[in-house]
Length: 57
Image 1 (cartoon, rainbow, N blue to C red):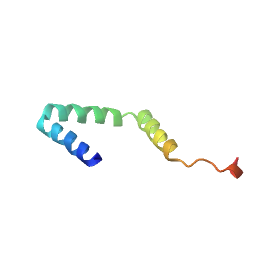
Image 2 (cartoon, rainbow, N blue to C red):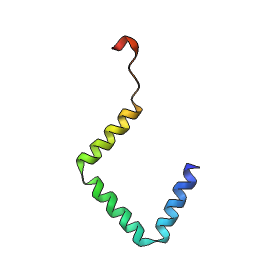
Image 3 (cartoon, one colour):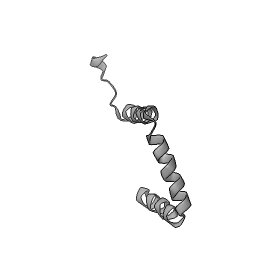
Image 4 (cartoon, rainbow, N blue to C red):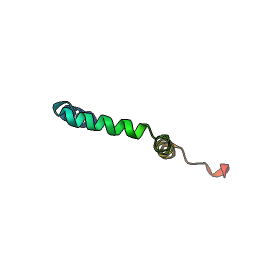
């Protein structure tokens, strides 16, 4: 299901080139901000980090 949604989004972006340019511009702008990239990486790492065991407190 996830791959179907990704394919649908990519198809829409390819059918509407101005929308593709806008998405690429927004992604480039966000990636140029190191604080935002670090914050997103921290959120992803926090979600995937295992919880500490009882003896490790």
